Length: 214
Length: 183
Image (cartoon, rainbow over all chains, first blue to last red; front, side):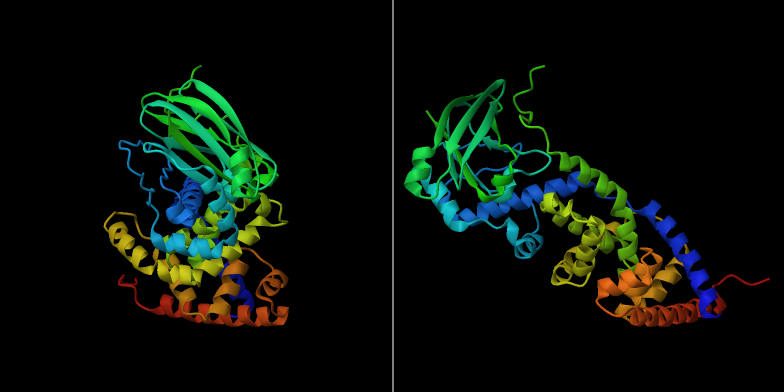
């Protein structure tokens, strides 16, 4: 067989391979990609805050049942998390700003729930929302922002919707001074959904939120 | 309508790029997986690296979406992953999964396609990449050369040698008895 006829033969063979294989492949789906990215961002945020965040509860459906610190959901295999972190430096947190923002929330009493939202995870697709779970009851939602500008969070608890606007800053005292608070009532099943707007500046901010029992 | 207390209800609409990612994913996932399958010889592994590449694209989608050719970006990431530490680190995990997958049913590809993929696996990596990019990704020689950072003549040489090797393997496969008596 000369090169030209081999070329034609291979074109046919590869076209058949492509057609046959396409029908055999079942994509995990774009939703699975979204879930993976969200999970990695949450884990990156949680691991970056380390021991500083006393109570971190991230994830839809997580319902706190005790006053103890909430565990971080770790459903992603560690290998992929580690390599993703090393392969995507953009996903890493500015540690200093994270520490400042967490410290600015102040000492949290037992029963509080808090989380840190960092970097461009403020604008994840398709759901730029985070759930904070806590026992049903009356709480104050405290919002702190490290970086520039202001950030307005929309908080939904059941049918109640409130907003809180925090002024961002780069020192602990200034972030604490700019922190916003809003009362929220959590009813059974006890979840507050916090939405943060997607803006170009969001990627450079670190936002912390805490549900503090009243 | 009042949302249920435990339902996530977005106060802000999803950014427009979200929809474009969905379309992008749907349009290209299978083609890219076939290309990686041709290179790796393992469909599940190909699917894993392509999914991972799409995840990485999604993580920086606002930037990737503005590239002239986002598919090329995802393809490059997938190919890099296919030969990277990430892939090696997942070997054990995939082995375990394959054990499960093997117990479940899917009909195997036809013998001709198995032979083609097996023949591809015998080629040196550069020739295999060139063949796959040319015949499965429909990339012209110049584009492959640009991607591989080499001269077009080198790519032509890879393709020529790759074709010759494939032809030899496939011819050998055809002339070998396959267990079915010839009439």
